Length: 120
Image (tube, rainbow, N blue to C red):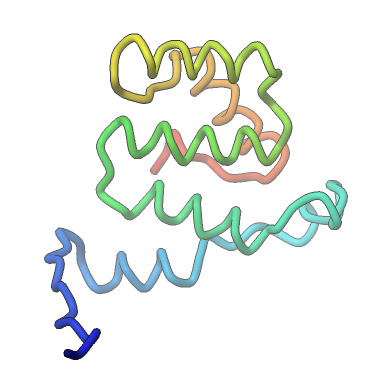
């Protein structure tokens, strides 16, 4: 009996160019990287998250998940914020950020990394 199984093919609703942009990641300007502690951030990973946000054709929950990941990486959320997010998830059965939490991450990206998600 073989443990090999056929790969599952999942259709993607995106352009090849969007996939290429997501794979490459969003470039973060060097001057912005130097302002922040190089050891604290994986700029390559952050760039991939940002590109996925821009080009991944995500619903609000998918976008919020990426913003939460970026906000957590940047240290923007307190333990109380995280607990509130988890409570909302338990109560509603879906993950989401409040408009204020979204804006906090979007502002940080614009101010600290020079990435404008509002214009995307």
